[in-house]
Length: 299
Image (tube, rainbow, N blue to C red):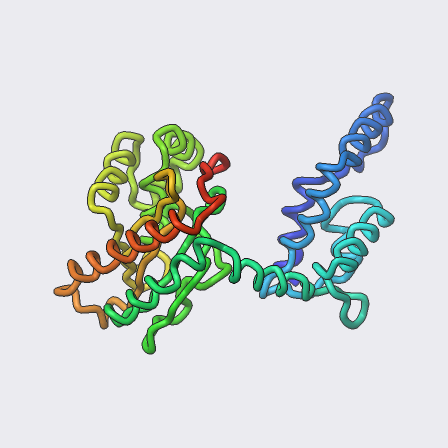
């Protein structure tokens, strides 16, 4: 319930309604707002935004709560809910509540069958886990964040390891920093201007010059190493994956409980991760039609 209230607040912030008493310009403003809200782009964005409300902490939502989060009229809210339910993105359960629907499971299967990054990484990821004895993950660049798309767990994998479908920011963890370091200079400048505070607390630099130098070191090493940046006591090692045009696409890496990790083998693990990243990059170039895209929305 607490998370639902918080997420309702965030959605309301984006789509708040002016509830003050109308003045002489109220109806003109309302007419303009209604016209903007009725545009196909705005309507689609609002409707699909409902899916973001469903989390492991708040998996079930009533139609009234969904409409409240939308901040639209009841008729519009019911229309959006019905449209998502009709295509299987939402499914009704008891007491007028909804959960995410079976169509999402079908789409996930499609991704597993068709995603070039997911398929390109399978063999290399398995080999990496077998050779190092550590759990492995493959991540992709997703707007201003990093998304885990595939994992292969070792028998003694650390708890709460980054797993498929989870997102993390660009500034913490080896898997994220291996991607961040290979973004273009213009993208990095924009990212720094927007997130300098977070970057400083992430240990990447308190000014632009230091931030750039730290990322240059990661690029030169071809691998990133982090300890405890997400899960306390977990060490991660990751290397970048590129598309056919040489643009950063994602990363591949391993993770282990730092107390059980033999640091004398760190250089060997780094080399194994770099080699795995090269194999995935080479494979993406062969089967990765459509992946030659720039990360235009990053930052």
